[in-house]
Amino acid sequence: MIRVGVVGAAGRMGSETLLAIEGCDDLTLTLAVDHGENVESPIAGLSLIDFLPDPVEDCDVLVEFTHADSATEHAIRAANSGVSPVIGASGLSPFQQEEVANACELNSVGGILVPNFAIGAVLMMRFATEAAKWMPDAEVIEMHHDRKQDAPSGTGIHTAQLISSARSEPGEDPTRVVKFEGARGAVVDGVHVHSVRLPGLVAHQQVMFGAPGEILSIRHDSMHRSSFMEGVKLAVRNVRDLDGFVVGLDKLM
Image (cartoon, rainbow, N blue to C red; front, side):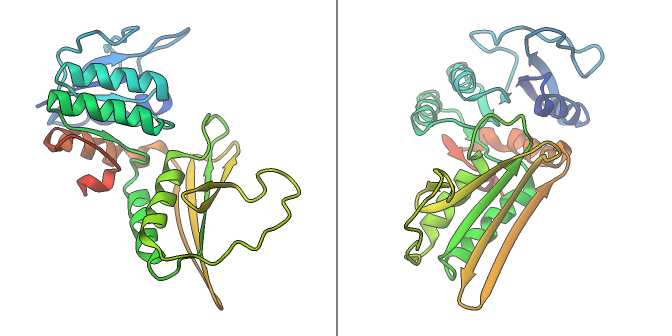
């Protein structure tokens, strides 16, 4: 039985995670953290506490769904307590990731940062990496709900980095006059990434590859947050077997 704590437990992803873990015979909820006005537990009889204890006790794995700064602090606190962090919060800087990695290494615990928990999204990134070997000209369009605070998304950034590492030299960008800043999107490791934020969306991404006379599009759509739960459970069940801190659910697939 794996003892699991969830931070951000009353949020959209946190609530879905609590319900998913509650339905597993090999996982048990031992800690749920959230705070704020009118915050209620999505599971009857499960009490929420206002802050993460230091040290973190009664947990084997801590799942983190808040924001970059607090996620970094909580993950380090977990690692220092011998608890493996699973970070679902996005927007961690390279420096913050390094801080968590150092804490995991120092305490000999496995940890993982997951840009996207959807199995289909991980496969989309894997297929895009393979396509980039043959079609180096590519752009990423990531689309999320209107309450997402960071851009580009962690998935968009990670996809761009994978494409950049796999492809040969792309063609030269012909754009010489940018009439409005940001018209060509952000540039992540040489790959253009465009962010869309609209109500009605959940999490969607399209990677477009172009070559003479043809276009290849690889797209993934999450219509509900339940799409992320198989990945959450995969991470929780396997994070303790990792040697240190890694980025990407693909490391467990």
